[in-house]
Image 1: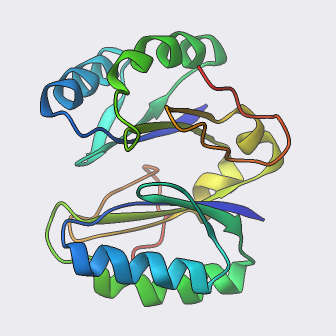
Image 2 (image 1 turned 90 degrees about the horizontal axis):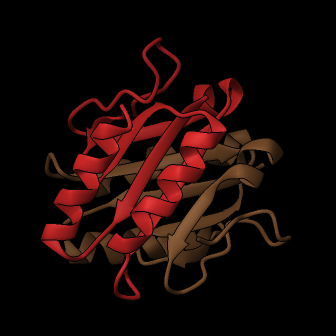
Length: 94
Length: 94
């Protein structure tokens, strides 16, 4: 299933290591602090356990969000860089 | 439908005005740069048009993400502040 991983991590080093880990799970960066890609339920659980170490202060947060066909096709992403949440033209850019 | 709005906005003033606007749409803040709440399809479109002005540089990005029952119940949020994506215990904290 498609997943969106969005995070707010204040420490630069932790943020870089998190990005590397997400790439290892086969996710693609779509924005400064957002990755997208396919995860099965087991991957999701394993990933969730491994990213916990990057959350340190109260502002830090990581969302691992599954997006079914319906949710991903109605998601809206607003950016100047033309982020694509799903390959086929299902996401509106406003 | 439940929605998660997550954003990365570099300008402090824009970020504060965006948060105010999200509150006006009845969304509740769940994290430093994340809000959650019910939006109907029309609200989603109106909101998407109104938040575009806060996206200025290439790093800025706003995700307006619908979460059906299935997606919201398997979403994972990792934070120190015990963010609740859905009221009932459907979200795992790791």
